[in-house]
Length: 304
Image (cartoon, rainbow, N blue to C red; front, side, top):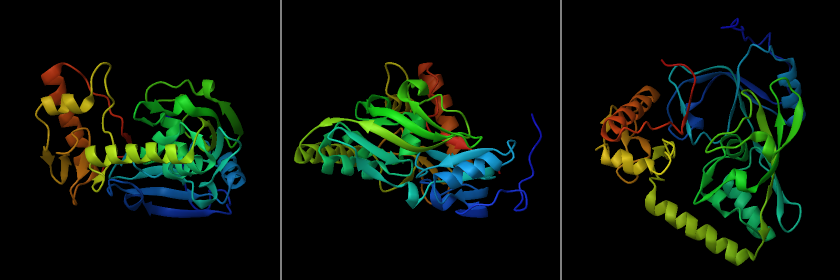
């Protein structure tokens, strides 16, 4: 372990955006649980972010936060700086009949609807991923048979040392729900490529995906999306169901009755309860099937 950096207002670089000490993260994540960020930074623009990371003590950990959909923030909070890309980064525009350039803070809904209006097909699946471009790019987000690796041309990234890089898709070395993007790097933009299509056909496909998602997933609940990765040749939800975990509870946390690969905060759950329930499910699945489920949800910060 290296030295632990002391992060005080006096040691932080000056910014044009907003820096907040001890910022509660529970309201910013889908589970609505967990502790505070030691510092939350909402940069004014890419130059603000770049200068801040360049001048920030390299020992201070940095984490980017999107819509907080696939995330457990542990109850003890997140040390260092959490970077949240706000309105200045929530952009999407067509470059031509098959290509879109988007900011790292753009939601999947904004990207897919901008693509529809511009007649760009092939990005409809992003409509169903409850995250931002930065999250998709880092995690190779996917749904309904498509993933980010299929449509990404290049990503614009601010590295932990403040350097700005444009990385072609091959440099991210994508695998299932994983990229080689280094820790502390923040995705500030991406270029996606689809194919020319008719806006009404694109809308119909978006509607089909939205209806399928509504029918199968507990969208009206405090949840974190898909909890576990699908192991080769298996569906995680079937393994969880077969291990008898449907509806199982621990404190205020519950395995969804509607879709067993979703954990729910029924209202009072701590992040500790949600994570412990997930670990109990993993143990039961291993005992029942011999298969070790891997977390798809990111777990960050320190326990209470």
